Length: 295
Ligand SMILES: [Zn+2]
Image (cartoon, rainbow, N blue to C red; front, side, top):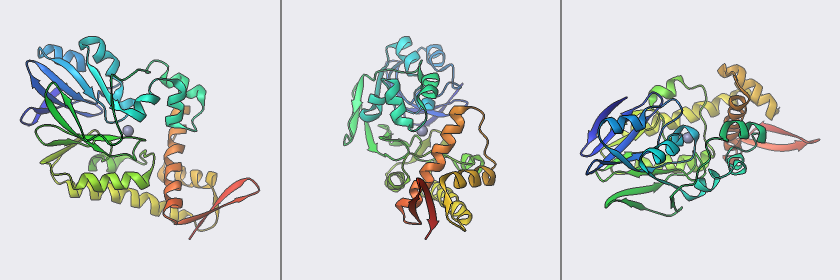
């Protein structure tokens, strides 16, 4: 795994599935921002090989592809785990994970998360604006929407880590559909991050960007394209299952496992909810079936 310099003491690991920033505190200690997925192995070995110790992990949110390395880094270095309070609570139990991924059924939740539960050491509040690790101040920007309580960080060098608020244009060109918990709030967070004074922004998936406005625009356009796609299918009142089927076919989606299939339905569900929130569709319950009609 290669480390790439960004600015001052801020670097990132070019991991297979993520760009994972870290900040060098001095004295051989580093602060990691998120800890990667099950595919981003070798993080502890990387720092050991450089004679460094991970003193802390600042997590943006609780999704599995951002927190998978937490337990190993705590075991290897005694790293302290920082996490948004609402998401930390959910990481502690299987029912908490079910709340995070509702309505995915409990049996699937048990299979996916039974070995990944943990308790954070430090909780980040919903109005917290900074966190200090060994004298180094990281700005905390509250950016909920992608997940319940997602936060972004700015390192003492002024490098912003946006986690999953933005995706790279390369990912946007390839991803048929992406996950967001609540688009109405996510769009506010995107607009907020667009205004953050910083020289560059790291996104988890994946890379470092200097033109933040262009990055934001590309992400908003991606959402707008998906919204237009659903509206183009709604040439008649449709049930939720009709919309699922139309999008699965239209985007060439496929499952692979009950977890992936359920997640995909959650992604489509978030888009339907956004259409309701923005009043692009009306919803009525006909004999126990929700029917959506384009306005
Ligand atoms: Zn995420």
